[in-house]
Length: 348
Image (cartoon, rainbow, N blue to C red; front, side, top):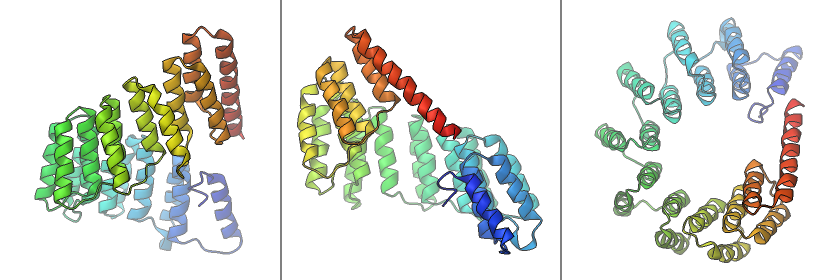
């Protein structure tokens, strides 16, 4: 728990307390300490903990321990450490599991290192003891989709089915999002029809993806159609949904529709967040409606949403466009104060 809360010093202190009170740490305890250091970016300390584990007969690191550390390396973009960790595992006679390979594949994919990702998949297939699963499929398809390499995405989608791995709802959401990014709306519709034939019900993520894609394209009719459809199917919109709708209306220069959305939200239990208010503030800022933009800023604080850099930068841009230099400078001062407070908290 301390590790997940990014409190590695406290986790280490608790570990020391265990030792001083005569409790012998188990493999799980050591692995949790590795995770606590790794998740906070303290990779040297995490590696030192593993080195210590090697000297204790009943606490030697296993595949799960190394997988945790490898996962931390991928999140921190420390891919240079992965080959040596895999070599170390091999030397100790520890075999990679499916989860280990999936962690590496997903990490390379999210970083756009597609060649390394495919090489890791090849190693997985060649090892003989690990069979790719739905998580492998989704990582590969998502990586190629995010990088707009659609032909390779489609190739692997088919290839995995030949391996006997059927797509799930997450796969379809990835495909819809990938096609939406490049404007292949017919293929998006084909995926939706295919889902219907296979009795896959669209989820909140599915509808949010569709609404966002059509909103970014300025296709308001389609965006509103899927918004209505999600409600008729009993799926409650969330803050992400409304944020995408606002952005879509801004793209189509239909800012006058935003107040209707805000009134609708007030009659729901949706908890509005900072990204939503940033979208609304941006909408009115672009439209030059400074007074309403200010009202939205006040409403944001009433809803206990803390303004962030995007909030201030958006409002400063709006003020500058209207030659309101005094107001822009006041916000710049607040922005600097916020930055100073954050740095002070981090230093503490």
